Image 1: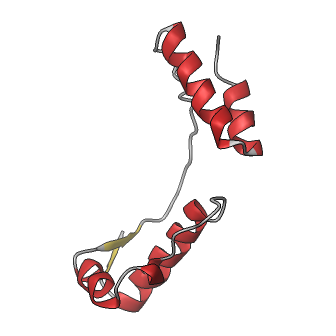
Image 2 (image 1 turned 90 degrees about the horizontal axis):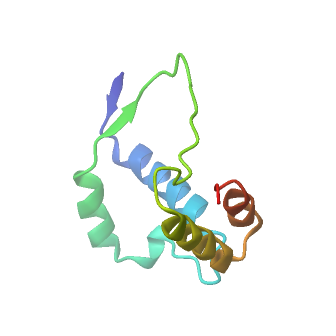
Amino acid sequence: MCIVEDPDWLLAHLHTMTDGQETHRDTPWKVDDAPSDYIEKMVRGIVGLEIPITRLDGKWKMSQNRNAADRAGVVAGLAAEETEIAAQVAGNIPD
């Protein structure tokens, strides 16, 4: 594991993560939308980690431990997103 405190490295990752989560929205938020002094302060409070991945195991967590009404609510919430990926996920949630 490697600890990274380089502000340029951290800021680049903040931009990448934010863009990845916001691009599908009608009005996506950008890191640059926040005041630069605020972002600089927040970056100083972040410690980055680089962890080599040697194995990756996936597991679906699809609300299967919830009751039918809760699962239906999750499906309805995903449907409201009106994106292809949300529809695919909703299609995999058990009735």
